[in-house]
Image 1 (cartoon, one colour):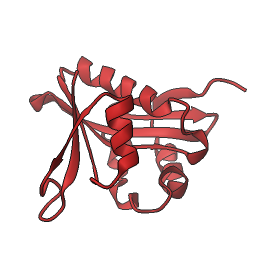
Image 2: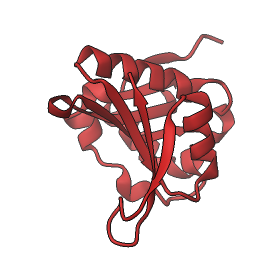
Image 3: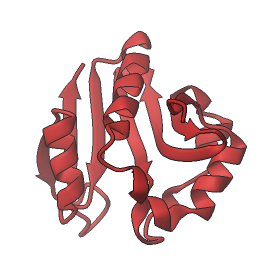
Image 4: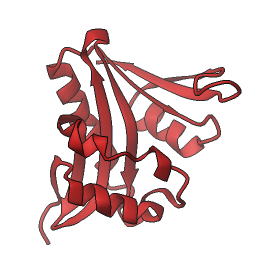
Amino acid sequence: MTEPETGHASNADFRQIVRDIVDFWGSERTLGMHNAMYVNELVDSSLVIKEGDRVLAYLFGVVAEPRRVAYVALIGVRSSHRRHGFGQRLYGLFEDHARSRGCTRLTAVTDPSNMNSIAFHTGKIGMSCKIVKDYGGPGQDRALFEKQI
């Protein structure tokens, strides 16, 4: 078996991710957050790890150059491929891309009850975390992750 390859996400990758959303997230709770703009307009900051045509992991990000901030909107790894370092690998590539675009800060958010995400971002990625009241809108607190890059 060959080493999985990393590259930019395509429309076919996006359709596969959305079709298999439960395999990446355990439910359809994030389906509405997945938008084709990540592969149509933000292709430089949308990454996948694939084995052949099968997407194993992905990261959709946004680079806000004027603010020098890079934001990870979504990161998912198939349940069968967790604990292989794919999330860290994608974060590293995205961080390199963000730094090359002049960014000095990396951010992400999650629901404060998502302990797996909080553990991953603080433990594996080295981000700080704080709970921000109403960050997602009125009554929608979020765990905000930040890292200087």
